[in-house]
Image (tube, rainbow, N blue to C red):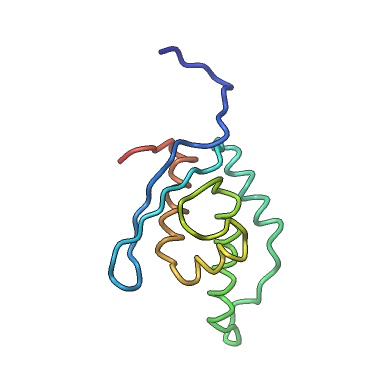
Length: 126
């Protein structure tokens, strides 16, 4: 098969991630991520950082709740930008994905890491 550059698909091939659920079972999500080159991925991260509101300075007055809340919201924005479709019964909007990240952090981390691997390393298999 000949290799042709510039033929960009809309999404990567469907991916499956597994992760630990709070009840001790294993969760599984199938998703299709928005196709991004390494450069596109860097641009997405730059844009997310530019759009991010300044959080509280990390000092003795910073509350853990604030830090974790900001992390979940950041993950929600990342997931909303990365996922085109998935089989989870969760809307693909920032609010729902922020809640997903807060309640099932292992699931959010699994999708985020898998998507990062695809974009940066082209890793589509084990």
